[in-house]
Image (tube, rainbow, N blue to C red; front, side, top):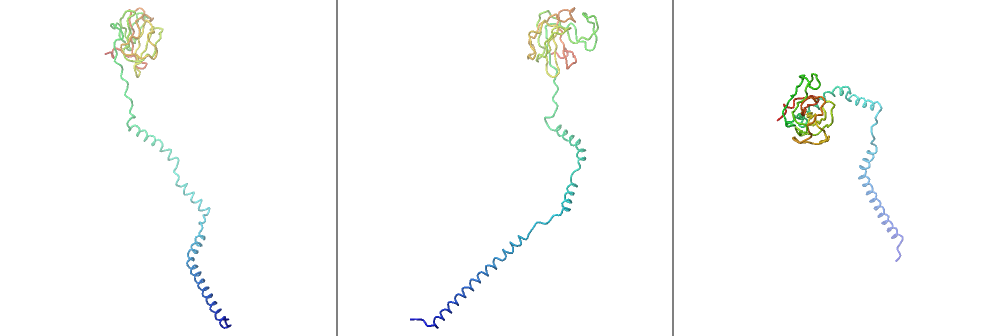
Length: 240
């Protein structure tokens, strides 16, 4: 059955009403969304509006001046250096391990030849030299012996020198640690030892000779001396 004109108009009116209501609903939803998003939008805009504060050149120079004022005076530091160095030295002295090493004690000697002492050590006292005919100090002791008799190391040590002295003849010097040395002179030769050789007390190191021009008129003997550094000291005071 065909619809009349009145029925068609009524149908169109309902459709128009439904479309209008749908438009209102969509518009309301969009408005609610805008309202909900508005705080975020405002916050974003506020953040975009933020900017760093401007710093003027006057304030910058003022800041540098305040830093310079706090810089320590170099002259005061230099004046404190002696005191600081003294404090370091006192600290080092107080700590263990900085104590000075104990001095080396003189060696205990044995007689280096089998015989008696015929001329003692004179120290600073002048004695008459039978061979040279003058007055001089006798820097060691003369031990009576026969030519060819054995000469022994008076203490442990190292051969420091082995040579021929113009006045005292063939000479061997043994170092005993620290500044202590023993000298063996008027020897037959120095062929039995080498420089740097270690010797033990009682080792045979040479034989008695007659090579000392300054004591050639004396009986056969070993001239035996002892030194502490460059000073001659009495060997008999250190014999066992």
